[in-house]
Image 1 (cartoon, helix red, strand yellow):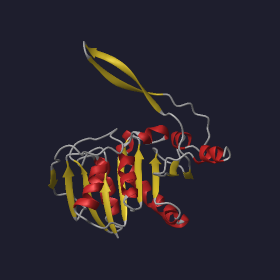
Image 2 (tube, helix red, strand yellow):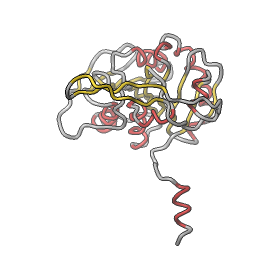
Image 3 (tube, rainbow, N blue to C red):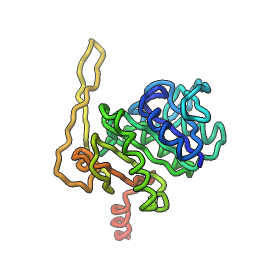
Length: 239
């Protein structure tokens, strides 16, 4: 199996090293990740200027490249630039959960959307910032969960969140707003966004937000297709 690893925290981040050390047991690992942090870059790509791409050494990987651009561009370089064929793309392990509407902003998730757009199965993996030392212990059972349920035969795109000391694995759907921001004035013409948690826990474990924040690993099938089929169906009745 040929596996591509990427992330949005940067190629020097701890999470991608944890993931590479685990994934090398599954097959041949290639790491192509941003040169520096690209959190919050979503599915953005660079179409207006050159980007620096350097081959680097990376423990556990057959090849590795640092890309001075977004996670989506890392996947694009792998598939369109190198022209490599991969069986699976793994993005992460992100330093911070990607749940609820936060996945809209996530560069970690943006990378797997790009993989899916090119027809490659992909999984994003995220955890709490203080759990990067422990999260690797859960990867085998997450993998077993995917294999046991044949998940990649049902969908090619999944978002996985692993909380600290996770007690089980649940299928979930995307929840609502998890974090929002305030704008703090920092100078005459400058502001900084400051995040704050706005999640209201209803103990609805069918939601990735509630499940993960209550100690369960959430496995959420997601899709590139943003069509609202319920509305489309209602509109069709108006004809």
